[in-house]
Length: 288
Picture 1 (cartoon, helix red, strand yellow):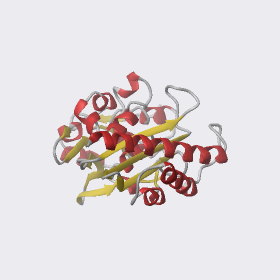
Picture 2: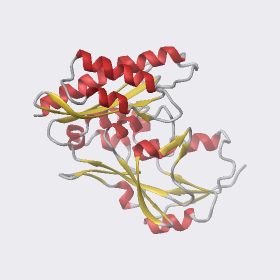
Picture 3: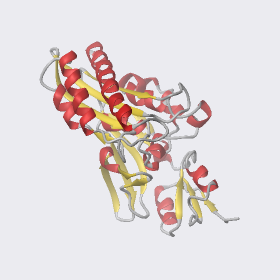
Picture 4: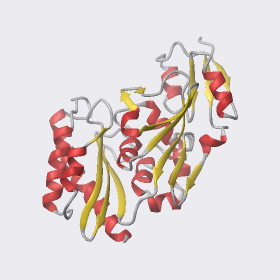
């Protein structure tokens, strides 16, 4: 049996010291990591660094400037934050789709991002909101746009010894709203066949800004700039939704697997893009 040591630092500096030793893994909620360890997928791990006792990683602050979401904040806590739900409903929708209530009490949005799954629910929602990942490491701190954070399945842009501290999302401007939708064969505790996150800003009946992100249709969650370009400059009507859906389908590059063939998933991208953008637009108009 593999022997693994355990550390529970209470500061980022102490965590950096433990991670510098090599063969160490960060333990947040552990909902993915512990399964990987049990299945023998991480044979070289000698140390688990539990970061839940670090105050900065447990911060959840929604203010006039924006949302600060600590990397270790569990999805259940995020989902129960009324102030966050009112400002970022799409992100909360995505967090509430992760597993069961028991899983959500442990799993975090930060861990979901670091795990690097192409089908992660919260990552497209973060990308749609223009979220930035704030990372600490031996060379100091830096920010990474979430659309650049996941570099491949189970891979991310952090280097050895770096730690995700929190996620930052700017406060939505007037007339802005977001939404996240996914399709799964079952209603609960399933992995997305396709996921779509969208945010829009509407002024005087016209879309002036938009972001659309896709999950489960490429090696990483992706931004679909063409879909946003199809929306900006006019009303979000059936014609604009059709253009956005077509652009999103064009950038999608799904695989065929047991959850569905590629052509089916590409078609779902169009359907969900229409629905997600339309709901985000409805919320944006209601927010005025």
